[in-house]
Each structure stands twice: as structure tokens, then as C-alpha cells.
Length: 171
Image 1: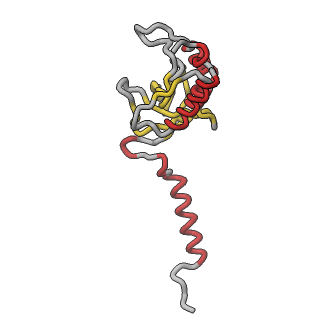
Image 2 (image 1 turned 60 degrees about the vertical axis):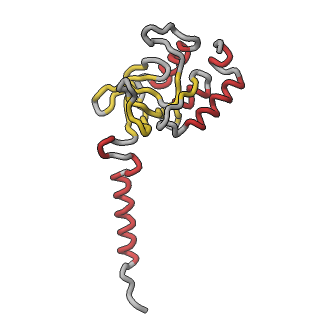
Image 3 (image 1 turned 180 degrees about the horizontal axis):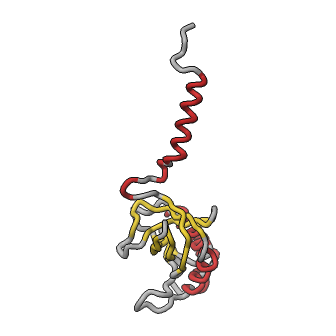
């Protein structure tokens, strides 16, 4: 039998080296000019039901949740909308002064310069929690539509059950 080019020990070392490189480089989180696809942040202030201010690497950024739209409470020139205060209060209780994970969409910022993100508190998907409870409607803006089918299903379920704004607000 001929001698193998790679011994088991060498192959094992190569596999271990490749695994370590993956953990360190984390190519699934992007990088390059656009920056990472996900970051940890501290929510320093809740603006309303779908917008927060978060400290990321020492800088405070406005962050708009992707895929959802809660009734307005602070938009200039717009009256407070039905169920807006409840959506805002829920968001305050859930994320204010807490560490969250922001996962960015394909398009990183909106026309107002806000970061666009899917927001996670531990394993809880905050965007989905708002829709599931009837505190938000879906708002799909391609190319940030990764979770549109999930959010739409949650919205239909909340509407059928009359949860939140679906049972309290006129169409």
C-alpha cells in the first residue's frame, strides 16, 4: 500500500485550522465596505414602536425595524394614531436599556439615514413580536424582504384573531 499524502494527524490539524478560521473570520457576518451583517448594540432610547436609538461601538445610531410599521406617535405633522402609544410602550418595556442583536438587511440605511435592522433580544425576534401581538402592520420594502412571508403570516393571524390594532382601530 502506498503512503497517503496526508496522515490522519495532518488532516485533523487542517480541519481544526479551517474551523478556527471560520469562527474568527465569520464570513456569514459580511465585512468589507458595508460592514458586518450583524452587531450587538445597547438600546439607549426607544423613539416609538418601530424605531430606537442604539449605541454601536460607542456611536449612537437611529435604528428602524425592517418589515414592520407601527402606528405613529412622534411623527411631526401627524396626529397620534390608534394603538401607537401601546406599540411604543411595548417596545419601551421590551428593549429600552437592553443589549440587542441587530441584523442588517441588504439595504443598510433608509432615506433618513437610519440603520435598517431585524432586532433580536436574546432569541426573541422583536419585529415579529410586534406583528404577532397586533402592534404593527407589515411593511415590505425590497430588497429588505427576507422575513416578509413570516411577518405577513403573523399579521394575517393577528388580524383574524382581532389582536391589538386589528380589533381596536378603524381600517
